[in-house]
Amino acid sequence: MDGKRSPEPFDRLTRLCATMVEALEAHPEYREDEKCVVFMHDEEMSGAVLHGYDSDIAAMADVFVHMRGVFRANGKDLLFAPLRGGADS
Image 1 (cartoon, one colour):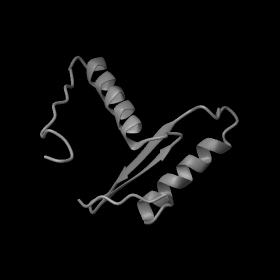
Image 2 (image 1 turned 135 degrees about the vertical axis):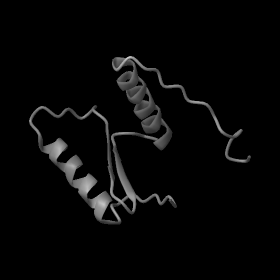
Image 3 (image 1 turned 60 degrees about the horizontal axis):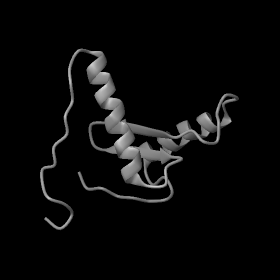
Image 4 (image 1 turned 180 degrees about the vertical axis):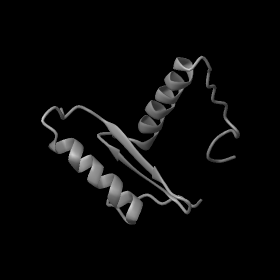
């Protein structure tokens, strides 16, 4: 899938994700320092909205830490290994 980054929702899935973030912000227990990643996927594409993060990398690091916790809670482990040396590789 080709990636696209935009400060505004640009398709059906990112609009749905943005609406979920709006619901989060409207909730009485929401605090300004909280962050979230809303991800949706259908048979054709994926969409995500990152809320409260200063960088995409920080958001993805939090997603990976959360995923590892889910795996460990189920008696498994999740390890990440780079497939290439970096952006220039």
